[in-house]
Amino acid sequence: MGEKRAWHRARYRVRQFFSVAGAAFTPVDEPYVIAKLAGQADPGTLLRLFRALTRAEQHHGIEVCRALERAGQVDPDLYVAALLHDVGKTVSPPRLWERVLVVLVEALSPRCARAWGCVAADGAAAVPSGWRRGFIVRRNHARWGARMVAEAGASPRVVALIHHHHDALPVDVTEGSLEPDLLVALQAADEA
View 1 (cartoon, rainbow, N blue to C red):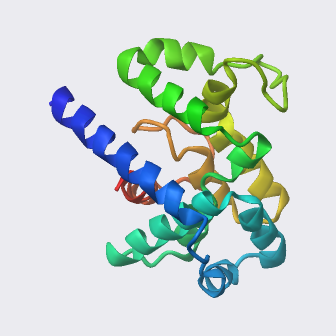
View 2 (view 1 turned 120 degrees about the vertical axis):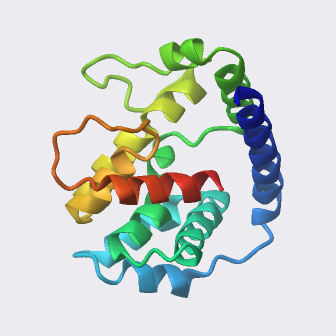
View 3 (view 1 turned 180 degrees about the vertical axis):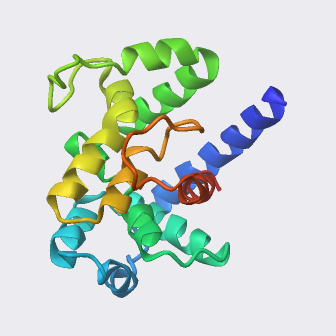
């Protein structure tokens, strides 16, 4: 089973690479994004966060949101989480070589990838640097993004979904706003 999962991840990453390469030439469907953010307390601030994403990350967020629609999901908070789930990467956008390194190390030695992604308990190093930068961004972007969308006025459900979008299930959380079925849907669409 592990071999099949590894092959799936490799295919996913190859598709992702070509998607990133073509993103610069493809316009972003901003009216779609505006419509999906409209139900939040401060959609303008959330739109600014979306615009801060790289063009490739914007396209990815829209793709995840549309995959959820195709899967029959109708929850507006889930759509917002899909669009903004990677917004924490704007803290320190990963470079292509860092992404490649992280994917390879995660495949070959997940324990090293986790260890290299750790930061001080106090959250020191707001902007990571050095050779571990890509691992730190990968491991912490969900937490950073959750904080960003919370400050921007997103609902507690959106915040929880973004915060846990990379967590393995079952998720051990104390907040009551995380709904496991929505998290599973978001994770499936993100990995599709």
